Amino acid sequence: MSPIKNKISQLFKSKKLNVFVLFFIISLTILILSKLSQNYQGTLVFKVKPTNAKETQVILNDTSNQLKITLDTYGFKWLRYAINKPTVEVDLESDVILKDSTLIWTEKKGFSNISKQFGKNVKVVNVNPDSLIFRYDVNQIKKIPVKTDFNITYAQGFNTLDNVKVNPDSIKIIGPASLLKDINYVKTKHKDFKDLKSNVNTLVDLVVDSISNDVKIEANKVQFKIEVSKFTEGIVTLPITIVNVPDHIKINYFPKQLTVKYATTIDNFNSISEEDFKIECDYKNSKNKSYLIPKIVTKPNNIKNVRLQEQQIEFIITQQ
Image 1 (tube, rainbow, N blue to C red):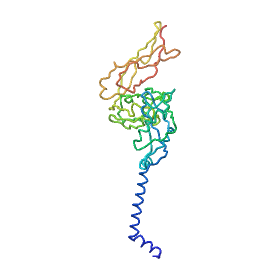
Image 2 (cartoon, rainbow, N blue to C red):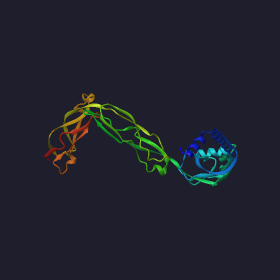
Image 3 (cartoon, helix red, strand yellow):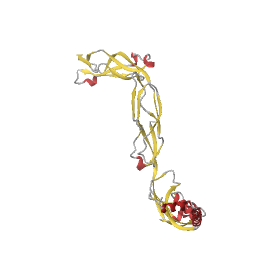
Image 4 (tube, one colour):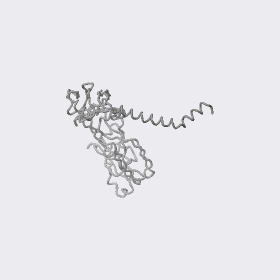
């Protein structure tokens, strides 16, 4: 070890140095405490938080509002403001003047409330600027539909008779008219429901990130329920009814009956009969055509995927 390094090592091991460092720390602590216990006057920038707005008013965000406040207080208080971000509250009920669509806070009206927020040991010397302007709008209520963003597939042989919907299917939003006018619906978060074999009953989040914080939303989740059942195919053969044929015309058409195929749950299958269906062709829609278009005008509610075997009925006029 070199002579210099050896001397440094011996110095750190010396009891005299340890005593010196200890006394230095004690002296420094006493000096800091002494300074912190003395009074100082200085200016700090405070963020402004508006309070006590009327229920009918929405204060529009304005991050530019701040107050430069000159304080006279002892050092410990200054240390607190240095550590925490300073904020003061401005009372929009008692300390403002209403003018057009703005609320004007003035030092003359609000100085007392500002001073109270600092306590007895802090003297507010000055507040700058002497006025602040808060823009506001009037609350409105708007009801908007909820649009689902689901990808639903069923396992083979399974399906549902339910329509894909959520509860509630619309929600209320409350806020300034200027913000509500462009909000026409809200979507659910995208969700995949794959190879379903059983019922679904779950909460789904709404996508509200793009909606301003100044708009209150009635709900941020909706309930999605769907009943999944085992399905089977049914077939019925039905007679065709021709309507709106003029009295002076007789027609002959073919075929006289049509086969209808549909899907339904196994539980509902035995309750469905031919009497639950009706097929019609409207002669008025056959102008300049040699065929009629069959339509199912009556069918039960507990079926889906209904389809006709034939899409056209040939006809001829036999008597005029």
